[in-house]
Amino acid sequence: MIRVLVADDHPVVRRGVKQILADEPDMAVRGEARTAQETLELARNGDWDVVVLDITMPDRSGLEILKELKQERPRLPVLVLSMHSEDQFAVRILKAGGAGYLTKEAAPEALAQAIRKVVGGGRYISPSFAESLAADLAAEDRPPHATLSDREYQVLRLIGSGNTVSQIAAQLRLSVKTVSTYRIRVLEKMRMTTNAELTHYAIRNRLVE
Image (cartoon, rainbow, N blue to C red; front, top):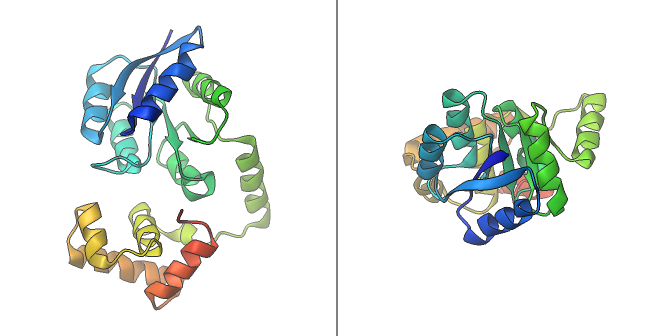
């Protein structure tokens, strides 16, 4: 039996995952977490075959949780299940050690398929996104935002969503000075000068919802 830990702050999503996997004879949800802290505590103390993790958690980002999980339990596969499209986060998740990326719009049977693949040692992305990645590699043309660090990318997306530096600092629990430094780095790497340019870029490239 594949023992699944589901980490998502929305009860409806956790219940939905549980119901989907209830129809699978070889897997079951044995634990649920609502926050980063609960996720890490359960992952440390339980015996799991896979973690199904949301990237948007209330206390820390799923990307940060993933990195900490991989440090503490490097052999435990983590499948990210997110509302964000694959072109926004999938590559970063895989680079950070994630075993796969699945959007919440995917068909229910894709979840069980993805879990079996990552538990078996493989990596999972959708066939359509795999084709998109192959096309990008063939073109050897990386978009400017691909050069950003994970934190810089996070700041770019928040600016693109209309947040001020102060609002971003509060959301990320960083000082205004630190966020301002990240903003300057983003502008330099993107070869832009204003937040308006960053916002236009983020919207045009579908980096924000």
